[in-house]
Image (cartoon, rainbow, N blue to C red):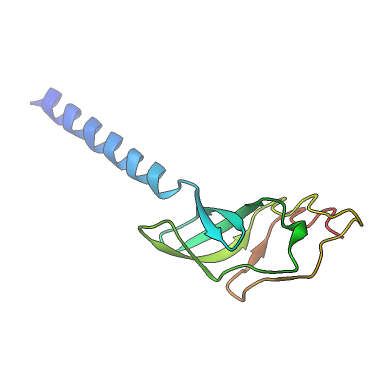
Length: 116
C-alpha cells in the first residue's frame, strides 16, 4: 500500500513540475517586421525579453500591452534586463521612438544600455 502511495505521489509531482515548466516557456510573437520574445512570469503576466531583428532600424516601435502564446493572453508588465542592449544604428542611437505601454511596471537593469 505504501509503495502504491509513493508511486502515485511521484507521478503527481512529475506532472505538476511539467505543468509549471510549460507555463514559464518562452514564446515569440510576430509584430510587424519584428519577432518579440516573451516569458510568462505568472498566469496573467509576462516579460518582454527582446527583439529580433535589431530594432534600431525602426522608425517607430510600440511595445504591445498584451502578448499571446496562441493558448493564453498575458499582460506585458516588464522589460527584461538588457532587452534592448546595444541596439544602435550607424549613428549610435535608436531611430525614431519607442513607446512603452502603461502595463509595464518594471524595466530591468541595462535594458537600454548603449541605445543612445
